[in-house]
Length: 488
Image (cartoon, rainbow, N blue to C red):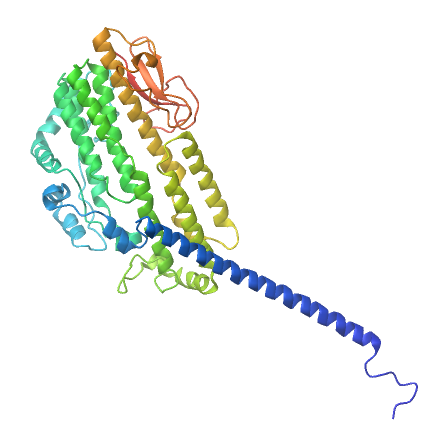
């Protein structure tokens, strides 16, 4: 029995405390539900955006999976495929390595070491490039002649192979992160050998032979035209740059006839890389998206695309973390960023204008920033290429190619008028339809008369006019232009 002095079992003070606690719990629960709801909604939206990108890509006929990429890597009839005789030729030199590659083995025997005579330009050990305007010194000339004599049968066989107009090497895209590409270094080596042949022909005043060798360099580079990989396209550019450098050396050393100048102009047209960057990014996107399929399935970032393929030991430690990210939905935002980034880069890839280059640079900065924000985008951060650096390399080559075409118009003017033009505008329209645009700035290519000869140039990657200053050889430098110089 309660007395008048006994407090009630549930006082107003206690009720107020309980009410406060319940309110806090309710608010916390609502906040938690809100956060969970936002998170689930965001991940569902990410997945929806990914499906939209994938559907749009397929509507455009673009490859998405590795199987689709392999199917898009156009087949070439045997009679038109220069890769086949080249591979047979390389097998004679290093049977074990090339047989292993053709059989699809996951690792190749170490390449047989290549030895070159001391003093051989471009390929020899510790060799400096020869001066363009000077004849080869007697010792270097002897080294070149002996080397080319030793290589004569090999070069003849390569030339026979290059009569086939296309190249399709046996790439195994399903190997993904372990995709082996030994043919790239071999093609670069063949291009350098033809460059040496062109150098000797130029030194001896044999312009037609030099032109034939430079044409073979271009053919080697263009064998990589259909390979949907950035590294392949960069090696392609490297080979074509060798040819442009050979053209510069030839024009530097001797005047050419109008038919020879026309042939050089045809070679410049054959050296176009239009569409190469876009095609490479489509391939890189398929490879990048494959890693999302591998994530969390026990193979880490495994190389295989099929059920029997296993990831390498270096990626196995990533499997638990990637599996957790996949289960939690964190990979959805990563995959979305991958799609959005690649689609933007692919759209900009064919835009060889200053605005296009600026757009790619902005894109790179944006992707790097987004990859570090929550939720983290680990895979995109690892596999998305630096598109601005790649596009700058394409733009630099295109600038030099356009400068070469312009220099050929200058040379045709000189043949007809007996003097150099005072300005590039003088070439239009008789010798040049229009002055080519500079890929780096909203301005045509520039032209400067030298005490002897001239230089046609683009302002290059720093966007600063350095008066036609050439890129230094063999070292990294700033403040240079993309030039084509004829000091004659």
